[in-house]
Image (tube, rainbow, N blue to C red; front, side, top):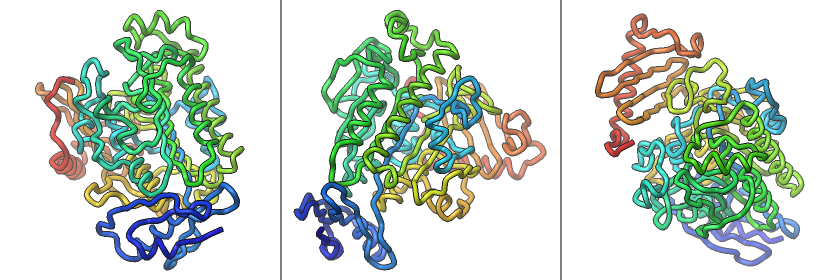
Length: 491
Ligand SMILES: [Ca+2]
């Protein structure tokens, strides 16, 4: 065993030592980091060999005691509604693996997606910033390649959680849906992921892996592939393969299932898929039974992925985060919440969220604090002790103090804006208050709700609470002045 922490502390590069040899070197911008923070992060990134294959990192500087750099497993589902896990209230099927994951860590009842459709929430997660800070985040959602080509996407120059972790020694992979721009200009491999296995567009058939225009959309890195199989199972298998690979550094795996996004196809519906999706009628059909089959495959798959962590001895050193990219669709259970995907009512943005980190995050926690997609990005970076990029201030906050020290999060407003055609919605949540505006060039309707007493958003309180109403309205206007204006391109 060999330790070269002193090298990392003395040199503005971070030197990783593996099996006694220099493995690789990376540079990072110190930006505004102070000395103590630098010493902590640099030391945390100095890797030492333990045993024959497992590398851990130790922070030995300053007040930092031993620190083991965690693996990161981020699981994103697609259009899973707030109540679609049995632990969140669904009763017509069971999700035992995800329910167990929830009891092993913290489960959030006031978790929000950054947007009510796919692309912007993915912008928010990968960048840790409000989606309206980037042009691609105004695509709500991004069309398929036959509609938009490769003219817009997540710029490879923009830091992502993947590129930041990769630069600090993580092996990174995205398995599943990207939906942030097409080749040759955009893609996971250009935005920090060492490996990619999945699809670029917003929706593919679960068996043919073709997008809404009938184009095959399934890739291994940037190589188009045509493989048989139900995507949920293919993604599960690929994730397990990645987890089980021998490696001498920590990993970050983003597992972005396309389930349970339409087309409504369970693992036994291959024949159905030949008629459903190829007719272009991909949002038609489905049933609660088919939805249950899709969720069972998802839950089984996640159970297998978590089992792979156990079998490889990595479960105790892996931060696992589970969340959905927006509110549910027609077969979802929304609990008390109004509306669904495509709305800034609670049903469109409230999502299930779970964080498990054995030995760090206490089990059996149910958290009512409002959180949003970008918080998960900030939490991952904090757990890995990787600073954000200096010129790209995160909009999320690190949740670990609330999860480990039970320290309440500071009160802060959360914002949303969503356009569909000529219709524009905006929302703010501050404490239990919610301001909502829905309008178009035909006019604007504004509402104020108390979510504590009125989670269904039925009772508009703006007349009886004018001061709060105006406060939130001003907050929204100020926030909107700080992000990109509503896009003018066709929705
Ligand atoms: Ca989605």
